[in-house]
Amino acid sequence: MKRGLLLLASAMIFSGGVIASGSDIRVGDFSVDDLRQWEETSFSGNSHYELVDSERGKVLAAKTDGAASGLFKKVRIDLNKTPYINWSWQVKNTFSGNNERHKQGDDYPARIYVVVSGGVFFWKTRAINYVWSSHQPEGSEWPNAFTQNARMLAVRSGDAQLGEWIEEKRNVRADFQ
Image (cartoon, rainbow, N blue to C red; front, side):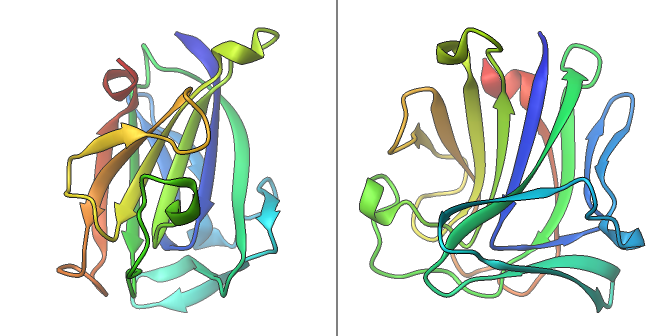
């Protein structure tokens, strides 16, 4: 399973960056002011991304008001050798009144897309969205509202840990199976 890996970070604060571990591949290192290789894609307006100082050092902060965009970086990773992804995030608020399982409510306080490219067979492209859900229970999984090739996975949920830095580690290879 050696495919391209695309990470898309949106509406959250990251500490230190995102690391694919096993062989430790540093995908992003926000602590050293490094956003040069990240690109922004807009779905409906642009979120505001900036590197800011915090109690954890330099972090990536994302703020949005009715916009939908994300930062992405393409990286080739062999998921057999490097199956894990690690990140830290902090969420300040959750959303009310949206049904996250439908297109109109597909909005999260924080999410990370991991995309495995199908290459020239674009219909084989698959994605996992690791989300901080406002309403879905932690550990729940459901189809993406826009495509059958993506799954949503609630890594965190609700208000209980708002404002706290949370360290995450996921086995991407296992999550894709």
